[in-house]
Length: 163
Image (tube, rainbow, N blue to C red):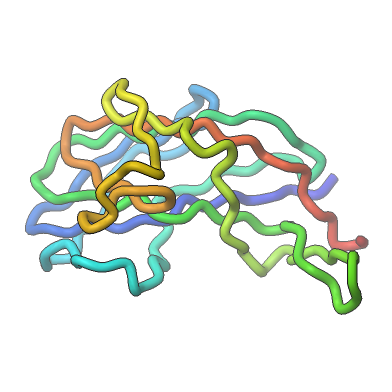
């Protein structure tokens, strides 16, 4: 069986490191420090977040719902929760209506499906109505110490390398 890895990207900004507890389907997958960049939170989205907050694995054949939960504690910094990425994702092939696997080493931004299933501190937040000028929205969420982020995602079956 092929193992697929999911990576939650993100970064913290401020003067003091944060701690997070990350769960997937109520199982702790990471509990520890997020190193903080000693600079203010950027004011635009014209950059790519390459820092991995945490990861977890599933069989490439798995499909269905997963609940991602991040609880932030111990710090004054702001956590920016960014893209979710996965390997063994489907990519367009070289000819029309064909698809290929991204393979084990190519991590592709994973769509958050369905939109509208994001909660911060128990309140449903709608990515379409968020104020994107402060980095809140569809793929970018700003959290502080004491905040709890919950995202309900629908995982589609991965693409084994042999496809």
